[in-house]
Length: 428
Image (tube, rainbow, N blue to C red; front, side, top):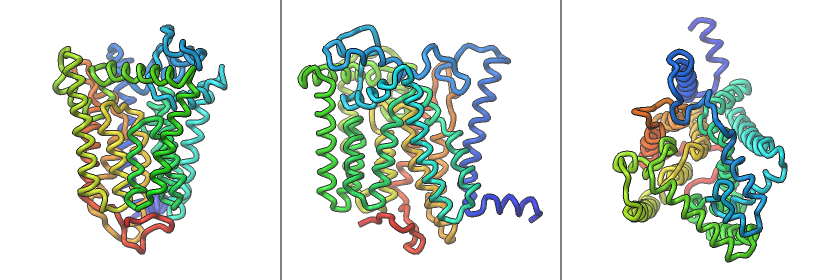
């Protein structure tokens, strides 16, 4: 090997080649996206495709945060639900609390949101860099890997561009997983319970506690979800009954507008149900039939999740269980937009740490390479996959998530005990 090759190898010492290939894939995807966008806009002078990024121009920036602001002036009153001058509120009551926290900094609400988002990402990046460094990776290489990975991660940019609350959900779930892995069961339960009150599907993460017979902690998580939900309804007001009725009306509206129809946003929806809609719902459909189909889908997904938990996941290593819960929470819901793939970033980081551990000790875990590639491909920029004016990157990422789920169920993700980091919770 020549001197330059030795220096390159030394610079990235401790990082497995497959991890570097994943990073290269993400960098190339960004380059292709930017080049395609530049050619379409400045050379071919084509019209705006759907949900382009980057170089996307919007009439309203940070819409998921800005659009609700006028409505929150009527919080604690009936007008919060009845006023027609702004976007209807179509989220659980607990979601009003982080919104109100950001709106408390008006007129700097976007700055408040971005401060929280960048602060959360910075803390996660610093902790991940430290974990790589403790595993023998050069500090500069670890920092470069983390920085490039975040810069090339499309769900991060999408969430920030929309100013969506999914960044809060991601921070809570990531924190809950960190508490769980360090043996702090009650801390994990509170994080998972709070997240479940924001979005019901993350309640699945309480399975991590049930598998280890931490029943009190799991019950604490359920109680936390109930308390946060009830407290939020009281907070929204003007009465508990009025808030319950208004919130339910908003959730029903979301179901009708986003779950039961095919919209432009379906192109960035990577749920299994969105794939079904894209294939079979090509024309206007009867909403009653669509509602029955959705109910059937939810029942089948619940049964499938329960069957996989009991038949397979219950006996798998802890990392398999974390990957399973994460993939199910972003794949099985009837709508799951691009920003929910932030949770795959957490899985990607965990798999990278496992790859570094096994690379250092010369071990080989079947399926790990394929899972890393699936995660990387799921996180890349794919907003230019447009066919006949319809965006399909959500459906492509749906297939990648299915592959990741199958690999998780097939291959145990566990290094030999000698290579297992201290403090890690093991199966059993």
